[in-house]
Image (cartoon, rainbow over all chains, first blue to last red):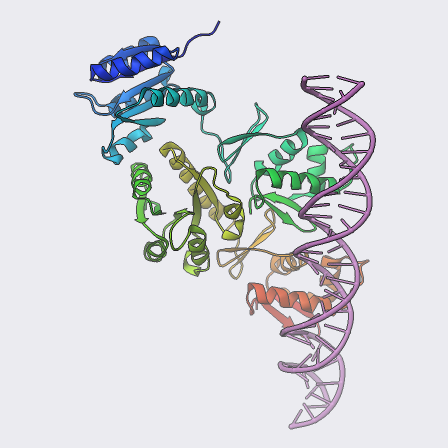
Length: 225
Length: 225
DNA sequence: ACTCAATGTAAAGGAATTGTGACAGAATGT
DNA sequence: ACATTCTGTCACAATTCCTTTACATTGAGT
């Protein structure tokens, strides 16, 4: 069973609700609407949406306020929030999505734009919503997925390369001696020529970027500088 | 009194300055901004920030150039530097840590991300400085990283030089006889001319500063006076 | 002051270590 | 079965490091 993603739209302008709502429904989403902040929060609690699109400027309770309340609700903490703002509006207000906003969209909105934006947000949500990845020098390791995030791009690495990277990455700056690397990545009983390490380091360097790894001659390697 | 951490933001795009600046201020930091490299350096010298966030791509003077100048300024050598780079930009240049950056962050930036990243960087620096304050005559040795801190500057030494320094440094003031040095650093079975020691001492003197090592004629060397 | 052995200094060769591309067997996917 | 990817090894190039060498300078003892 393929459950549709639920989207909650909060805006005080009925035209916007209708326009955006229509397009998102066409794209296959379940859309709910609310015409003010208070109603938006009630709605959010009852339908538990995947994504909330929130107008910043609303009478009584504005978008940022709504965002704060939703963020502090443990049941809704995973929900993605996107702000809707009028173009040219003061950036610093929009910047209020330190409260937990994930994106913002400027009005007037083209339907196609908003649909693709929503798709992107929902696609990204799985990895993003849990917690911020632990990035070190622009590199994050996802042990579950066996992948590496370099500059936001996901990259799959072969097992040995992954393990080697994981070892060095786990303690950036620490120098791992060649023997230590061997026993950690290859195990104590396996016998491989020492040059093997160099070759794998080279692979990592070419894939993740040179400069991420530092050679300490006669000793070993480290991640970072 | 709890002094706020000072952050200097250098970018030619006013939007970025505003967006990031706003969010960092919200997080409780003292934020200063500069809209080009030249101004950034002036600002850095006058406010002595804890962290500098530096756009790589800027007209006239780019981020790496600024970084180099700051790194060569003894009063600012302790400062943490993070680069801002556009996603997808070739970062091999930046990643070449010759530039001396401590981290880099990709644009477009989410406020949440940058705030947590800044926190992490500042946290790291603090622990770095409190956890290994074993300075002797302005020199600290970091065995794990295989580096030496001289007046706050991190320096990588070749293996033999590092071992020699470590030996002498471990007991400042104590005179190590030449034979003792040989057996400790080179081992008992290795045969090298005695002048080898002198040459290595000289290397250390030129790198760490003369005056740190004292010659005891006819006997050996010691660290300190 | 002089002497001479010890040390300072710079440069240069050689030694050791690492970088790199190509290759072959193993493992895996189709 | 075939193609693809992964893994480890090799040979050779590039680099860094170490040691030696040659000469200058120092300083303790006479």
